[in-house]
Image (cartoon, rainbow, N blue to C red; front, side, top):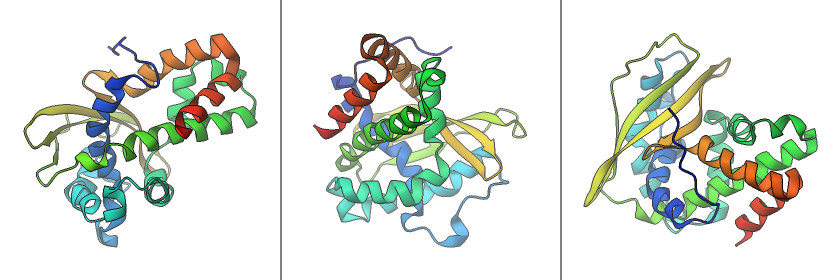
Length: 220
């Protein structure tokens, strides 16, 4: 069951969650330095897909001084080059918007995806400095149906002097291979959390109001 807990866009818990979120994002950032043969096999089992990049992910993040400094331009560059092929931002945004997505024009949908992407990228960039030398992502044995088109891969994220955090990745199988579109961190599904916020903002000021609020938050 999805958690009902939700937080405003600028709630401090999102900052605390960011350190864990970025370790999950780091799994996808592994391709910063990984050799071509280490790229995930789109035909692999879902846990193998995640594990294929997890081992080198943290090393890749630690090895980039601009990333460690939280350089937003560098983060955006890496997201464009390396994250987008493995994350379905459009689906994440569409599900977060819920029924309001169908009410939005194509132009509004595009603007909302870009604004929400900016929100998530800024969350990642603000937490990169917390990645330490012992940070680790351990993929758990896969217990679902590897032939399914929509699956959950479970992991444990550990950092120095911090308890392990259970993190679930929700993936979908596409013609291009597996893509991540949701995360469950500390029993909070990212899409469910933002769906509550999006609905409240849209009810107050419409789709354009939500886009404006996200962009204003991103600019701060």
